[in-house]
Length: 224
Image 1 (cartoon, rainbow, N blue to C red):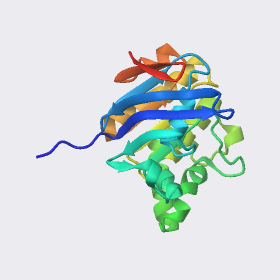
Image 2: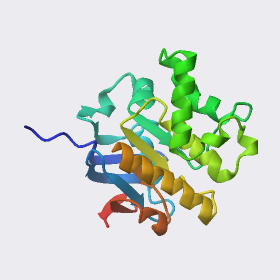
Image 3: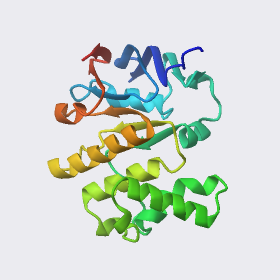
């Protein structure tokens, strides 16, 4: 039986800004196995968030290859579907809709899937339970703490059952206790569901939760 392809494979990836004067990602090459939890860390401005945005197809690379589950992302035309079904995205800011309840926020990405209202609600409640917020399902974001809002955002990112989760500084705006709660939720998801997680963080204590740490410096990769 042949081995499964890596979840993500990056080959000689380059991304520049300012007309080519700034090389945010400079020949990055690495791979992430299916089911692996990888943290990308490094100083501010080293290119780690840009790299994650490239994997998420929020940015286009200047050159190089991004292969996700055996398919080259840079040659795909249905990038919105890729972002909706293949990768879940969690950012430093939760971006929840303040007028919706927690469970309604989790349901939002499901509207395009054809699931019925009851199916969406069941799935939303299951995901809130997964991140430890089943009792806050009817609360709106202004009624939740910062850490709780971020956990709702994690639940929302999983609503369409993506095989890969990309998290960009998911604890960056939180105090240490709330950040620990967020990381416990991510670790539980990783261990219970075998999800592939690529997380960007500047915090070495947060990075220590991962299976493997990759350090970036000036747009280049340095294995931890």
